[in-house]
Every structure is written in structure tokens, then in C-alpha cells.
Length: 137
Image 1: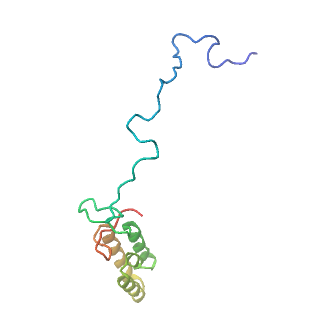
Image 2: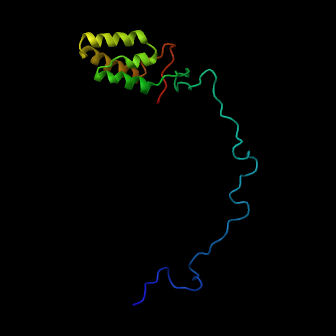
């Protein structure tokens, strides 16, 4: 019994098979007029808005994240209401939410925490300096 042969017959390639052509000289090199790799100019950052600007109003964004603040506020569903407000810098309001949570055994605080999280996620809450919260983490 003979072993099966794979890859066609041996010998010179048939005229239908394409031949390998080496790339032309200079292929894969940087076109003239471009700086060498790794020497591009630095990206411009606005010193008055290090975290970027709001896409609609153009205001500088806060260093605080909307996602983090909203998720911390939703931890209130487990009894720790006010952590999102404390993260944003509203310490008095955050402590007030914690106290209301303790007084009402969590019922009032859960409702307040959910409403507050919705307000944070819908851009109704700003940081203490009045800047809109930035997206992401």
C-alpha cells in the first residue's frame, strides 16, 4: 500500500500556478516627507482642560467620572447610599444620605440613591467646581 500524496505532482509548476514575485525595491519603507517612526510631534493637550472638553458645550470636563459616581451611588441598593456623592466631593450630601439610610432602615435611602444615580447618569449633576462629569472611568 502506498502513502497518499498531497500537494499535487512533483516537478515544475504548471503555467496556471502563479509564481512568487519579490516586492519592488523600496516596498514597505516610509514615504518621503514623513518623519522617522517614533519622532512624531507630541499630541496637543489643552492645559485649561486636561480631561477634555464637553462635546456640545465646550466646557472643560471634571476629573471625576460619571460612570464611577453613578455606580458608587447604586451601591446604595445594598445599604451604602451616598458613596457616589462623597466621591464627587459633595461630602455633606453624601453623609446626609447615609444618615437618612440609617434612620429609615434603608427604604428612603434606596429611593434617594436610585434617583440620584439616574441624575448622575443623565448629566444633571456636576462636580463642586461646576464642571460636567467625564465619560468612562
